[in-house]
Amino acid sequence: MAKKGKRYRAALDLIASTEGPIDVSTACGLLKQSGTAKFDESVDLDVRLGVDPRHADQMVRGTVALPHGTGKDVRVLVLANEGKQQEARDAGADHVGLDDMATKIQKEGWTDFDVVIATPDVMAVVGRLGRVLGPRGLMPNPKSGTVTMDLAAAIAEVKAGKIDFRVDKAGILHTAIGKASFSADQLAENAEAFLREIVRLRPAAAKGTYVRSITISTTMGPGIALDRSEVLSALR
Image (cartoon, rainbow, N blue to C red; front, side, top):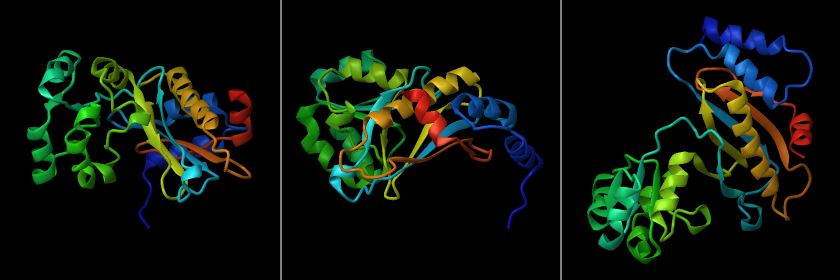
């Protein structure tokens, strides 16, 4: 078993010495104290849900605009016909095209982007890219606002911090909610916005305990288990 470094062990000791239930604000404060890596680590939130994603009526998927963004420069690819391409460029899209981009994705496996936005009239072309984009969670979807004729608004939302999330096969949501350079308050507000949306999206078919556990961590740090009851009470 690999030996943990001094920073990691110090972070574990700090977490273990914390008294009382750990709510969102407390956890974010601990992250600020323990995040000592030499680069700006991502802050990740993992939420285990009491759902079975194999059943369509228990799928949890959606979007949320984080109040302070993710701290990441989001690279946007827009797939649209020529008539809409200039609008996408003017709105700040990083890559714009259609057949040329589709060919690059299909033949070269190119995925040097974070979000794909498409207009409804080109979905026949986009559909052929499912084998490459689907497994990476990059397929445009009307429910997430990435299939639209209003490209300028969609690009602005994504660049400002709108994220798309989907529960995995194990019933867990993994989401980056910011960077270690964010203040504790900014991280807490982002986490609460995300968690509030998860609670709102509870499927009617989900039985028993819906939110089973919540863990927050930095890229190089240990996970901090939040007190589920404390967090959910604060969101009401």
